[in-house]
Length: 227
Image 1 (cartoon, helix red, strand yellow):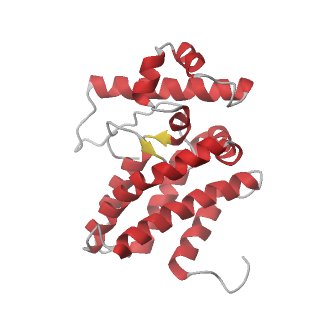
Image 2 (spheres, helix red, strand yellow; image 1 turned 180 degrees about the vertical axis):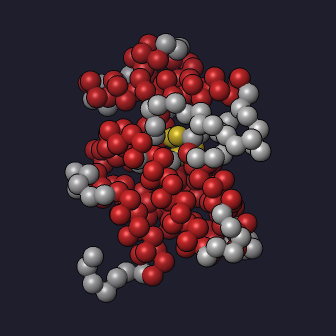
């Protein structure tokens, strides 16, 4: 991805959070991250990595904030400073603002559906294909743990508002208009259901293909025949 990291993580619209370095190189025409921001990202990633490792070892419910803090070598208060709940550790990442930057960077004359498809493919590549094991674990938790799924529903509005702004910029519409809000939340809800469908079917399908089917459905409506 090409955008600089944000200062605050947001709920992901893709099912995976990379457990590996979260500070990709930025182009020369974009400001480099400062030391403080790099440290914040490193701390967030350490907390996430510790959480996923503990969940694999002993399950989600048995994993406590104290254990996560100990494994990540930070204090419990630090964990809560970055993630208000344990569910947020699973659900938030650095990628949503980056994807919005990618959307803003698409050619102005590119058809809206093509721009969305390009950005979603980038999201799959960055958030899923680079760490398939984490993607599968994360979506499994979304299906199996009601608290994770509930928190995801609560947090979707934040990402939806960000997407409304990006849609308005590209289309010249009011970000508060009903049409923009409905489209943005339909897209986010569709991507969430795609992630749940993928996990419920034991991750057998190609996730990128499922995302394409989702975007086609949003663009053209329910197909007349089963895919």
